[in-house]
Image (cartoon, rainbow, N blue to C red):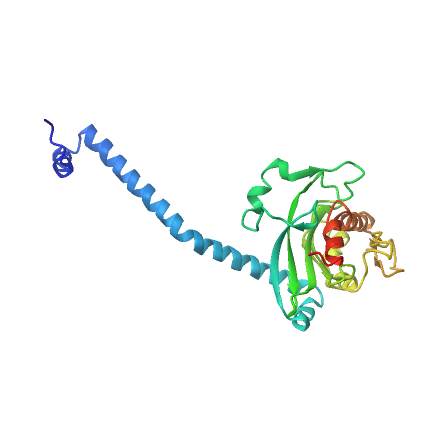
Length: 266
């Protein structure tokens, strides 16, 4: 009967000459198995640390973006409170029940979680819109929303434009805008990143008393509470920003969410 003692088997293996094919294959398998176990163990141990680091990095990036919005640092200091992150269901205008900030990326890899846009709907030139979006709220000491930070994006004249729009508690007054990414023509459309132009956004309104979205980048000088000055020589970029704003503030963007917050349902 064969000796099944593992210690004896190990000694026999080690006694084999180094040129032995059996010894080479067994040792290679053992080294691979040990390395795999080590990597798996390290992944499990480090996962909470990595998640915490990602959360801290995201918070620091968000704070940096907020600081870049003209007047925003002072506003946040005056309001107090803290920022919270929420994934919203854009179709329903409410907090998502089955998607969290941690699972959002995976959810958006599923085509079922995107909505196709008709030509008439697609003001921002997106083609399709995600069903979920991660937004941020600043709540005061009383727990009430005092500021909402809404990511927006769309086709510019040259390339996509990404930004974060900050709205005051009434969800109709703009607190500021931060441009995250753009590749518009330098000195023309590229001026949408200039602090002097962005500072005009503060205090502008997005919709009239009937609820119709009126915000626009004017073709020249702003002439109403719904407009900011146009950029000379950058008519197409100005029009693109108007379309992006009107899409995201309308019924196919954050419109249902804005309505829910204004009704006190969020």
